[in-house]
Image (cartoon, rainbow, N blue to C red; front, side, top):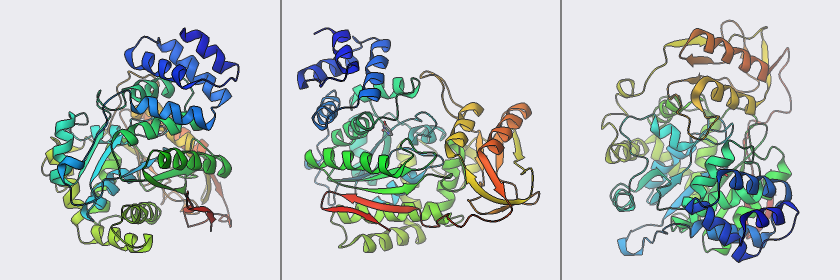
Length: 448
Ligand code: URA
């Protein structure tokens, strides 16, 4: 087979056969397909889409591009569970939920990704922790999952290597926002991890890859269908990404927010709602509780009694990070030199935020990438972001920018102000509820 002929076939909107998809994924993994060919293939899929059969084939081929895990021999006394998000701004839910689910009896081998486009990545956040090994081998992964209950790591070269390369190329070629590519990317990693159950956080709104409700439902349905076909119990919650999730945006600052959340020092209600809802759903799917509501109570208790923080601390230490990160984060998380408030041009209510632009403001500041091989700055970001409909003034800034230099901070402030709309009156249509729907195979879409 000739790669460019297959790329042309997809470009022209024809259906690829399974052997053709396997050939392309083989070339993607071995490096025989050039970066240009991979990018062209991704762009062809972006414009032409894929049939359900092609999408399932792509997912399987990418899953089979490396090892797949089997947990049976470890005799774990609980289900193997995971959560994954389609990507957001300030979305540190995985860092919180992995340890909380482990504290409730689940085993969580969480294979995470780096920042993609304007969204942050769990792996980049973990890299802000000095010493934390995001790429252990599979022997170490098994050991940590068995002993601690949770290990959040990146794709090793052994797990779904096809996605690792495709993900990095999509990130810098404007080919992220595609339902089949997102489905295959997420599920190739998740299916390779040998899960019993998976809960998906499908973001919807200005900062999501799928900004509209209908597109988000289509993405959620695609993921749930392909996962289920492969024997992993999966449901998806549609959650709000019309504003920053939680208080902080930026890798190190999000680790800090995670620590404060798990220690019950600072709990943002929207972030808490998303975390607890996903956790409740996951405990239910894994059979650890008899309803999602009971699961939510268990997750909430695991935060309040401090056990989530203990599991987080143990995971960090076992994977090479500082043993006292939770107590002495200030010794281990780098602080940027310049910290300045983002003052609104006029007093009033923050009624609208272009969350995608906030994500891009972080990328410009150095906290995300514009090239696949770029190093990122873990210390920069935005702290204490207000929520939509909060009152902002000279006494109550929109956020605090953490930057390397004054001029970079000034540019970030301009970018944030451009992304925010301030009005004299609060906006009536902004919901405080940020979990919109649940999508599962056993039922129709539930709307609030
Ligand atoms: N997360 C992933 O792992 N892949 C995507 O394509 C989008 C979000």
